Length: 278
Image 1: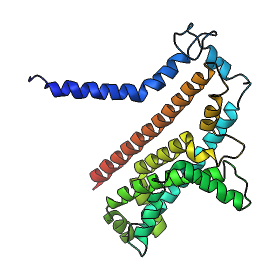
Image 2 (image 1 turned 180 degrees about the horizontal axis):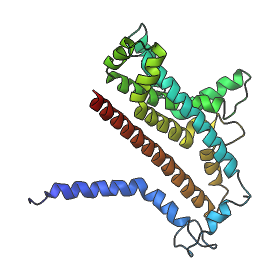
Image 3 (image 1 turned 120 degrees about the horizontal axis):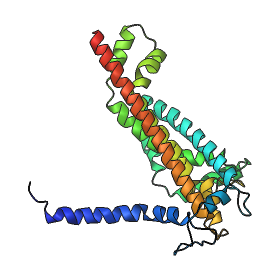
Image 4 (image 1 turned 180 degrees about the vertical axis):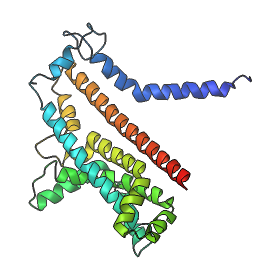
């Protein structure tokens, strides 16, 4: 076996440092969240315990942790469902070119390059000038869609660019209606991609700060609540909150990945059964 070149070790070291830079802060917060009752916000640690996790579930003098978590969860689900539905409809619409499609595509993607704080400011001003209440479920919902929809549409464009229309033609030859073709042919085939769009929509919404800052009204989402707590809370309870939210995000990602694997396996099994039947 030939020895690895020196460049391999150099690149491996750089990659290791990159991973340390990427995950080091999260690991540090997780470690500090297990401090003892006398622990502070910095090293060295003063004991090891679950005290701050238990304290997290008690009534806090500052902030509304669980209320903000519920709002972020509800908002994330709203954004996820809307992103999936609109992305699929947009992907289907853009399968054939139409007048103004290029301009419409550029307008959709442009929101990705506009600074998020400006989007938040603009949406908040529009609602205020229109006499509508600035609320996380209305203006906050709209501002977050400007962030999640372009990603969902780009994924769907890529999926439908590779989609073989022969499947739809075969369904129509068998007498299927347009809706039956979409429901029983198109959606099952693109199901793993739909789960990917749903994961994008939920996680981007759940973690979004800038586009919610000026559009959430008087009720904070979880990222805004954590930011506010950084100026008031001086105990490791904020680290415990960060650890729990990180674990929650990883669990959500794991559930989606498991679902994608199950869907892909079911599709492969259905394909093999159909092949044997033929």
